[in-house]
Length: 126
Image (tube, rainbow, N blue to C red; front, side, top):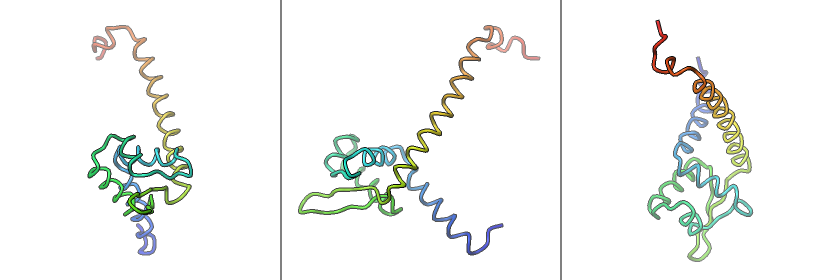
């Protein structure tokens, strides 16, 4: 059972992951992480993601809401950057985790492909 003091911390963490829970937002974050000074103009993000401006704006608003990115307006240009260097680390850890998971799946797939065809068709299942 969570104490009343612990609940807000878990809620904040859950909201962070909710903010990350869309492929377009992950792509935006990876673009920012790879950009010089982890900063990119909206025009760059539009070109690289292929999203419509309104959709990109919605995703950026979600990332701002969850304090994952920050923005700076200079004249007519808006640039975005990661709110914390740990975001890059989080993305790298997630990539490593997923690659390791897929490697295990590939091994299972390889082993399954080596089974005689009758096993794959369910012929030997009692």
